[in-house]
Image (cartoon, rainbow, N blue to C red; front, top):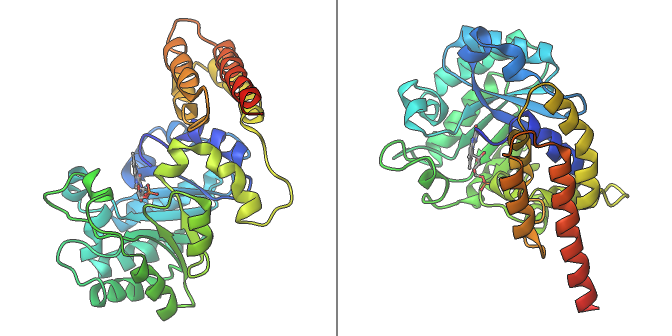
Length: 321
Ligand SMILES: Cc1cc2nc3c(=O)[nH]c(=O)nc-3n(C[C@H](O)[C@H](O)[C@H](O)COP(=O)(O)O)c2cc1C
């Protein structure tokens, strides 16, 4: 998610789950080819399984960017065919590509030819007045024929004009059944479902009908939800880290990044949701938001915020028992 799932965010999320697949923000293929690669693509070790999401509509650029991504160590390349922002539309990529299945198939083919890792597509069930049955089936079949075996489907249409990107994540109705029908029609493809999923129980329900579930906002706003994924979804035995253990495990990473000149809020902004719905969550957020911005702020800010919130939680637990 753009501006959200950067490398700091992913380092934090990876502490919660070893198994869930993490995705980068969408990067434009041209930026990857011509921009500062290390800055755009670099990531700390241990983030795998990790997917690089690319945007673009020029086959050569996407192929080159995919190759660069593969060389950086990403496990899969994903093409964005779901983003409806006006910037994306004027560049004729993102969700606008749903109107051009032939072109999308050529892009996937070019990327696949350039790399040996899988190339997947994240799309919607349609855009504007497209028919969510006939047109969607046609799109999937052509792109699958080009070698895409994994589709992540945001289960709502995108309206290319008249709705903001935010509204396009909320206003068009969710149609999970449409994604289930796709899986029934094409059992040979790996189909993941996305859009409006908020709990792991909901994930488990979807998991009976499709191959994978993608969480966006719920995981970002409440990252601790990921701490149960390995156990609940992947059937791992161990329970995973506690919130405090996640914070402690994050400290060496933070220290290392600060030493490289990164500012503390660039990292801690992704940690604000850790205590979501817990006693003391507001104190945690406020302490981190305010103190991390002060000159010279270091890991002590994080430790102090943790001591504060854990103290409040302990008191609340004592009151209950
Ligand atoms: C701030 C923000 C940035 C996003 N950026 C991307 C992106 O770069 N690529 C993408 O495929 N989807 C992006 N999305 C859409 C999400 O991946 C997801 O499809 C959408 O939010 C619906 O899923 P959810 O209800 O689980 O959040 C973004 C969403 C948000 C809120």
